[in-house]
Image (cartoon, rainbow, N blue to C red; front, top):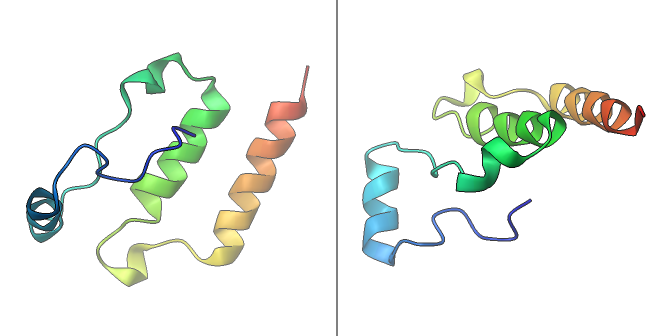
Amino acid sequence: MTRKLPYANYNDFRVGFQLYERRLPDEPLVLREWPPVKQAIWDMICKMCWQWESKERPTIRTVLDHFQYTRNYDSVP
C-alpha cells in the first residue's frame, strides 16, 4: 500500500521502544486520500491483525473473507 516497512522512519532503538509501549505503526499521512477499500485493508492489517493478545486477532478465515469483500467492493464500478 505504501511500499514501506512498518516503523520505516524509526531507528532500531525507537522501534523497540514503540513495541515495548505496544504502539502500532503510525497511519500513513496519505490514508485519508485513499479510497475506502484501501482504508479498510489498512484497518484489517494494522488494527485487527496487530492486536497484542493473540485471542483478539482475527482468524485467517476472517482475514480472507475481509479481503474477498474488499476485492469485490473494489471491482464495483
